[in-house]
Length: 615
Image 1 (spheres, rainbow, N blue to C red):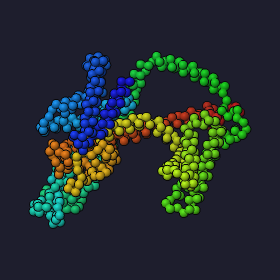
Image 2: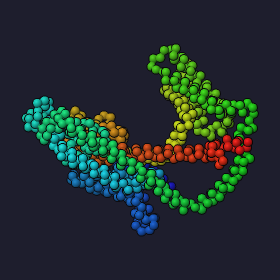
Image 3: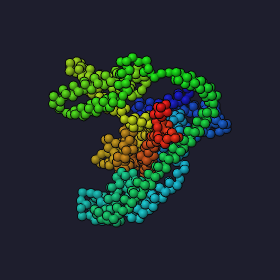
Image 4: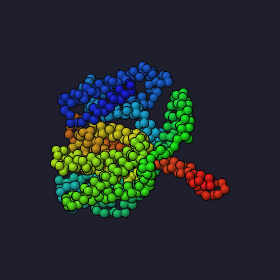
């Protein structure tokens, strides 16, 4: 109960963190509310930490608070919150150092959602597995770093100081820096992604390896002429060998090898950690499990005896019901229904804007016909199999749901034809939901059903990874609002990636912008805007504020590395692992149903072998 209360407090604290944004006036009621709730949550988490230390001890004892790594994380976050509260209440003044400390503490507040991990066992297992899988990959990390450093040093030697260019109204005849600066309206500026030093080169190479905007960087290198020289289009086309070689070796090979090693170690470490957790659980619940096993064995023996005596479910059917049962369980019946579903899909695909009245009437009649067929199919199966047996299978539940949707859609269409007062949105929703009939095709294909069953089995693990994804997005969105919430995009300060539909001025848009970055859409342009030079560097800045030139690249590089390269591939790997295990189970099941007779080397099914044996 205590953990659930603390988890609820953490969730509410996350809500208040999401409400934070730079545009809140200092003296407003909203700012007062957020400050008070921040102090309240800090007090609650402090009392929680103190209670656990009193109950379990601080450093000594088997369950001491600071002997658990997750408790250390919780304690550090609580201490950071306490220092932040003390600084805000008791320390005043306009000293840049004090203001800088307070801003760092505000940034660290965004890490509070990490406390959720310790209270969510599934997410905790995923995080521990990812951390454990990172330990044995030192060699591949060394290879990645070696390639990046080699190409970085080579890039510095090739392009240092050569990516400056002249910007202004009259630059057609400019060939050098001195000619550019003769006109006071011109500016001699550098490209944001350049190779002037190893740090800049490594950042440019990481953008190249993500394959977002690599063409622009390549052509900037091709156009470069020399130091203090205006670039010339396609000046040295042989330089593309450098960029293409890096993409082939690092972007396609080394980084994917790194991801592959992480995924492989993820599976190994996951199995090890799961085995350890199972072993601990077995030690704690051994007596209870033994009792359950004894009870289960007794029940199993009873079921086996009942199974031996039991008859097929259709043994006591009457003639009519037996005939209907044979029809609905026949493969030819399934093929006929599949053909009807295919025709229904074709009829739905024939709809278009401004249809002729004749075609509209025909499609409506076909809709009624297909609905009648699916209703009769469901009714026949319900009559033949019985209520309990019919709804025991999930595919039959889906069939019944689709039939009810179709009937409801027809009823609402008739209401519309009779001009009854009904919301047209409901009718549109019902028409859209008719497409669910396509799902009936899935149960006819054994391979697709097996694949969907595999996805269903993997959903708990994928759900844990999804929770970790959400936590990652939440933390980075809160950090993004604090770091980049005051960046401005206007005619005076044009942006390459940020704009009306991508910014960090509030939590919602920050979350959406991070999703856009995770898909690889112009994230290098957004990072370029965060590293702009035409900004206000003052500590008390309110508009178009500068961001630390080291912190901003770290923010984007870490997020892109985790979201694009690691977590997405881990999700795919989990699905593939379950698919592989499902395939092995299916093969093993098929192998059990076939065997060789010792005297006749012919492959028999069990049923055929029994018939042959009784001859």
